[in-house]
Length: 162
Image 1 (cartoon, rainbow, N blue to C red):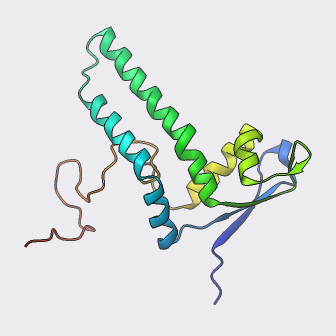
Image 2 (image 1 turned 90 degrees about the vertical axis):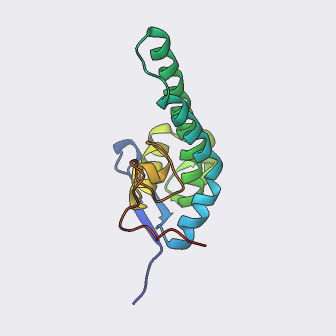
């Protein structure tokens, strides 16, 4: 049996008919490397989430603070996390040139068509098998297996007792 660790998909966007992109499937080793690479961004998101949890949104000032924090999260996801996913996962793009040169991962991120970039980023993240929180896109991020109420899930390892 052969395990193919990459996926090739055609673009589903009509204006990019004939464009195909190849990206990595999620494996245990790749997941570990990606999580380590994203650790700083996840820490920033946790900090923002902590700040947001303290806002009651009872006043216009609170609503503005919450909006600003939401904007910060959106910026981190679009400016830091999504490009990291594309750099991590995208291996090749066939059938696309950017400024007369064959498209590369970096040229797609820097100068490529935004709708194709979004399609590729979404495909990579969707195929990863991780949920939004694990992909660093929403919700409070945590490095523990504890659920929101502090109980451990049934898939978490038992705490170490010294």
